[in-house]
Length: 102
Image: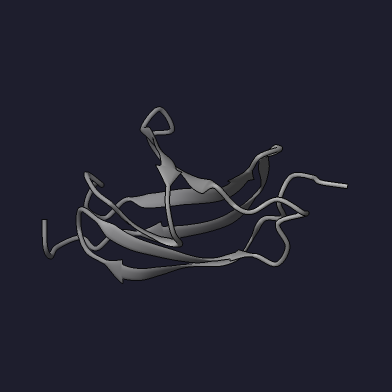
């Protein structure tokens, strides 16, 4: 039986600056019978919770997230999608640098 995919196996911030990060994750351990189509990444500022970004239709397992606030802490959820729908999210959090590349 085909089902929604598992959550991505891991997630990591590979590059971190004042206003952007490079995020990388590992595909789910199982796609539950239907290949992964794409991913959605949700990023939320932990202080200003109305500052939420969503990157949809991300192909592959890496993306650049821009227009972040220097020195801010963010929560990140990565969702995999197959023909059935979105699976559960993998979660991480990070803090941008106070100074650095803008």
